[in-house]
Length: 409
Image 1 (cartoon, helix red, strand yellow):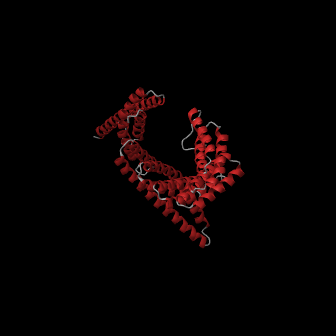
Image 2 (cartoon, one colour):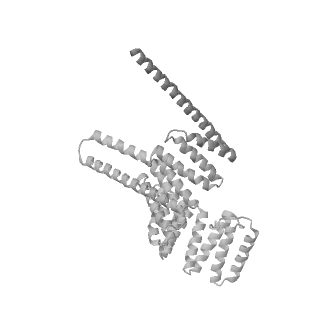
Image 3 (tube, rainbow, N blue to C red):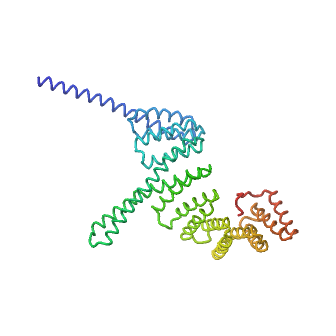
């Protein structure tokens, strides 16, 4: 009896062994086939051999579908094939694959995994850019809700750390406990920092698209969450904060809400000037934005003061190009007030700076000549104005160089 039982057990074990071996062999073959097809498909895609890439990646997807549920390779394959179709402009084929990829990655990693959240953002952008606004809004509401919950959680955690630290400040001893608290706080900050900043970037990207489509409420919601993540993560004088303040200011300005825009423009400038030398690059750009905001609110003296300060700083720094831009901006401010006589020397300076920076035949010079001519005509200096208009026409007719239509330099 025992011998027969032992034989049966051995037989069952052997059957199980060979069955497992067959499964492993099948899995190994599927893995090898998938690896080869995926690698060759990706290589063909990189080499712009789209037909070969599609064939290999389609076959790789069939192999990936044989893997156990939750296998991340399925999501990776779907992403590659969707990227191929998007590159070829076949967005109707890419869309269902991106949806399947998000579902597969969520199943593998969980709904609040940073990669999954990033995929939600990318799919939202895809919907906006390729004409599925209802799908975009639904997904964006989920993303915005997640961001707002995460903000609340992190604010609560910071508050708890602060309360414990306050307790230690009022109490003697607890040296070891304080040390453990500091380590826990450092580790928490380190873990969340990159995730916060990546999420802020995703939120900003989507907010830009909503703003461009005049969906200002959603854009504001996303910009504010992005700003809060940066405020929680970065030092108070980090340039990324200036960028966030600028986003909100520009949004409010595009809505005509100048009184809401102005304080954000000011914060953006303050942060920038604490990092960048005043009167240079980004610092002047943000000073100009704040000055224009003041002008929009009818606060002309504040705008004038900012431009005059910019000119002083730029002269000290030897930044002649930026000084030319500031001169033109201040001249235009005077023109808006009918202060034509005060605008003339500033126009002259702006013209000289543009000629020095880009050459006397550059189209930017023509734009300034035309503005200068209008001012001279207001002062009844018609002969000089006519000469400037003739020169501007000659430059535009020659078409020697092209410049950004929004720039005078």
